[in-house]
Length: 302
Image (tube, rainbow, N blue to C red; front, side, top):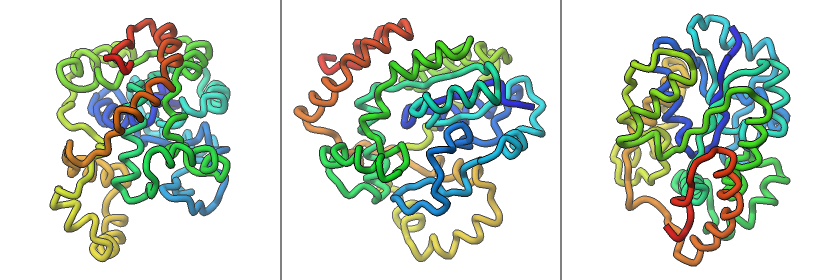
């Protein structure tokens, strides 16, 4: 069976959490989070060396291999959750249309400045980003030209309006979800709205207590500090874990072991924040028009 829905992005906006929430539903199958199949042209290097690069074996290259992932799916809704299809919308949309036709599309958006800071903290706390924020932003163009993964495009990933418009024009059914609606008191109603959109039983209540893919530093988390950050222990455990645990199960366990750490986050100073909010002001207004929702709380004045 071919996928009949895609969560097409965006990165650091709650797509990982949504992936695990959706998979709990008995009428939904998502056998793998990301395949990169519809943007594979951006992953042509057989053995990429850039920091945080996608392993070549994670990229699905052929239609046959892509459809094989879904061959055992028998549920009403079958899908893929991706972080890259929205950013590379010009490439992904015609490829999706060619292979899948007219699937339902879900786009998860987040305050672009918060998304940027989260993305920066993600690499900074992983020891992969050596630059201060301003220098890291200045390096975006050079990194992109050199073939670095799209996740390093800190500012570029926060411009949503063109991607939203393109997906709305390219597909009949597009649902916009805000990251802030996936947590707290709004999460239950948001999941009902998503289930309704996917035409599955909306009375099902998933466990949404865990927030996945946290960008917080784990230095105060003893499991990470003394075990998972220890290179010698990781080297010893890697072959055992690789042979015993499927990739998605291993990732789920790691996500659950992460703990929120408000003190382990970089926060831009007021001057930096103003520059970033000014950068996105016009695109936020344009996005408001496409999604029909007030985003004034995404602006600096709020």
